[in-house]
Image (cartoon, rainbow, N blue to C red; front, top):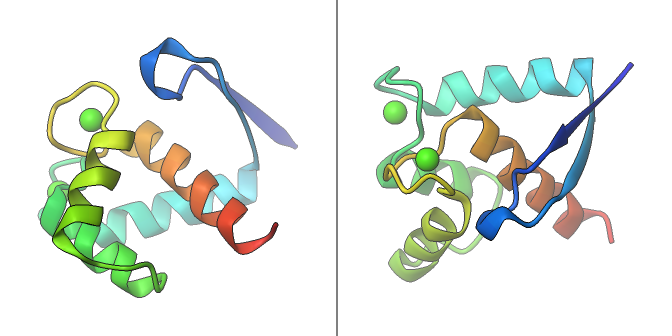
Length: 96
Ligand SMILES: [Ca+2]
Ligand SMILES: [Ca+2]
């Protein structure tokens, strides 16, 4: 089973992200694990531990940039939909 999610890209650009239900479930688990204060979104501090764990550079600038790039509704947090777009990018980086 594959789910198709549309409209996650910034600036209204349409993107297609294909994840299986199993992947989605594991992303939800990761999301909950990183959302340490359980407010339903990943803030800059939580994003920092996330990026560190996946081995991305963790300069303050890259945290800010990543936050800016994926926080499409500008509420200073990465909600689950925004997190999926981030996960999609991280996966693409790993498997060219
Ligand atoms: Ca949080
Ligand atoms: Ca957001």
